[in-house]
Image 1 (cartoon, helix red, strand yellow):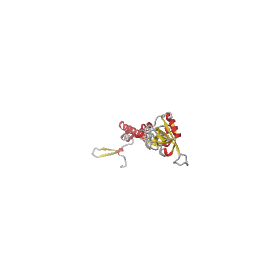
Image 2: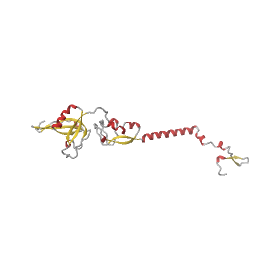
Image 3: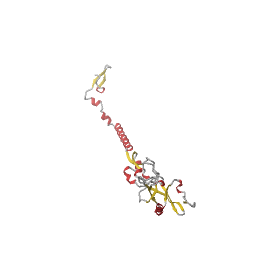
Image 4: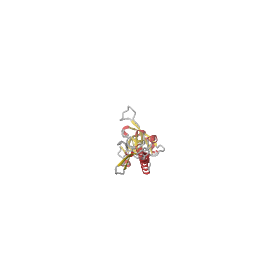
Length: 251
């Protein structure tokens, strides 16, 4: 008798004050014990179940959006403003973020479209490349290639994107004179000396952009008849005057 479920047993009072125990018939049990499905379909439990499902769906949507990784372009080393982007300057990495943040970065699939473009703002090593930091594409600038002894081209420290002043020294029968031929030229590429040559005597090609093509003739003369030295333009001193000098002591 103890193994019977409580819902199948009915206790009734007797006339003499003693309780009577009566087993319910199978026909009476469904009416006395509501089904689980019936309880769940009541208004309040049903609304609660719907709210839980909506909350789970929203959580999953946010989780998926913030954990999905997208391949983007990052700087392989520190890049200065004005640098012309080359393949060696960039690499790819996977980042996660919301749609707005990822839309502001250059994705990996657009790598070819930024090569050869100029940086409008500096980008630190390992930082993603913002779209706003890449100058809009346009016609290629006028350019000129100088042939400079490697040691006079800042040794091996000259990089694409640097700004340089071209100094030329001319020999004459009365002495030598050195003067600035052009200032603030942006370096596009720096070549390498041929293998097997002495680094102290080898020359390297350095291509610079010409915002004013009228200086090309003066650069050509210096390249042919003078000795060229490249001066990297600094920050505050990049506009300081550079007077000419000669072996006569004049100016």
